[in-house]
Length: 330
Image 1 (cartoon, helix red, strand yellow):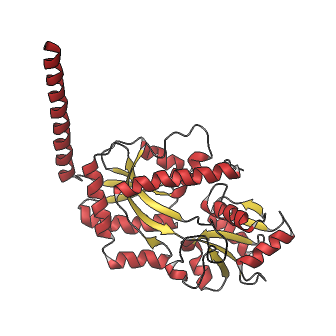
Image 2 (cartoon, rainbow, N blue to C red):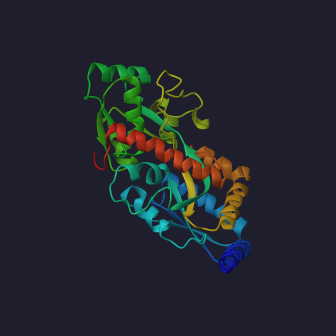
Image 3 (spheres, rainbow, N blue to C red):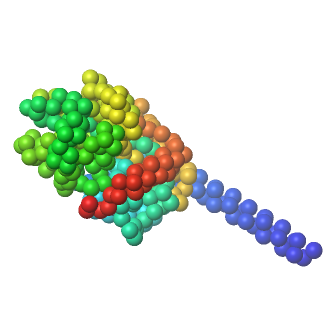
């Protein structure tokens, strides 16, 4: 009898404790934020991720009523910034605006990762999708993705195809195209988009696949010829450029995406408030148009959907990285 009473009291205490925690969490969410919110971006200022982050943060400042500050904390493929946020206090004041790489690709290329990309983050919202487009110089005799594939088939391992580094979405776009076309290029990895693009324009490499915001001005200016989009659908700013899937190359979708994440264990009520703030920001047509004109595709989802997406993208890219035998520095 005493044991039963003890269990009943313990159960009641646990229920009461959970209820008090919930009430406290809701109270904190109602007050949140009471000070500046920091958004960590794991890339230098001036890049496409930084551009989207700053436009969004300016709008979030209006909605949340507190400064939303950008902190550029780059290095190691985004893992330095990711680790910093993963180990921050789960209070909603330190967020991570990430690309797909740091949380779905790089973790499968390295051993002894300092964080678990799925367990150590809580999804707030998807922010944007980026189409990866395969391009050559306009002076190049290659006019289509098929013609580029035929060149590679005739001369395996000799056609130089640039990437922004091993395991990046441009590299994986090339790998998926190789598999779909049954060819092999000479992979030339660079340390970022700028040097890869410079050497493409200079004729040192034959092709590269890059996110639309990086190459849109060169395409519109007539310096680059797009051969195909490595995505599920055409980019709104390049409606005349067919996807590689449309051209008969299946399983070539390698979209990059940006998402806002918080440290795991951040109260659900705070996550929900941040998610609603992002949705409210995207209700502004001016903000959406700025992001669209840059070449990115404004996109949002719920925290539940973002967590499911993070898990699914980890599984998908983990399988591809393993199948291709891609390692850091390879």
